[in-house]
Length: 96
Image (cartoon, rainbow, N blue to C red; front, side, top):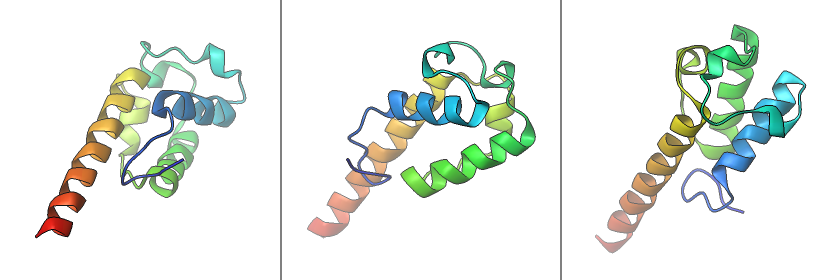
């Protein structure tokens, strides 16, 4: 298991599990293609999710993204891109 600077665990699975836990539901009930704002997330839940993502993945994600039209799939892709960019940057700095 790795975090923010090179996520190796299945990001989608971990994120859907985290969202399900915060919403008090089953992970299988969290669709990857439905806007997160439609899943019953309120501003308090979004704030907790944002804090958890920062702690676990080092990702800073605004609350609006959790309350709007962004889907879980889009969020996962963003986290993976951010992790890849961080890993590339770290590798470049280590080689410099």
